[in-house]
Amino acid sequence: MTTSAILQLRIELLHIEPLIWRRLQIPGDYTFWDLHVAIQSAFGWNDTHLHEFRPVGQRDGHPRRGLPLDDFDDNPPLPDWEHRVADVLTRDNPRLEYEYDFGDGWLHLVTLEEVLPAAPGKKYPRCTAGERSAPPDDCGGPGGYESLLEVLADPGDPDHASSHAWAASQKGIRGKFDPEAFDEQRVKFANPLPRPKRLFAHLASRR
Image (cartoon, rainbow, N blue to C red):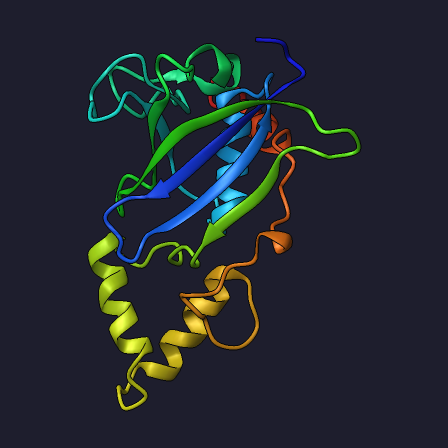
């Protein structure tokens, strides 16, 4: 695969109904770190927790790719900024899992849909489709999000107003949090470069 190729991916957030999903188009030379940052942007996550890419259904499977913090576990994942997505996600192996926040356990299925030529004049990554807002960070995983939605839908609940304000603040929006809202045109992709530099500086300071 040439580095000018574009990978079209469908990313589904599992264990939530109705389905929350995004379609992303990323450059063929993207690393797993780059993809992680793109997913964070497309779903509106805050990137404040650990993450990992791994084979489907293999929580302890190998190889895993993520943040290899030396005090995280005895078998840290491979550095995801050193490995290209296109070398792993192929037509013969079109699916991976991506987990964000091991406490809340936001599990995503990443599926390679197509390999496309880059379109003239288009900038990548791009989000071309999707449905529904992703849950706010730190709401307690799928079960906690279900409970939050019940509160948000009930104006008579004593926590209704404060929960809307909290959810909106977590998503960086004004007004009430709308779980059904999503507009791919409003997705702004973060620069994937700054955080690894901060991580390296932090690890170096501990040695």
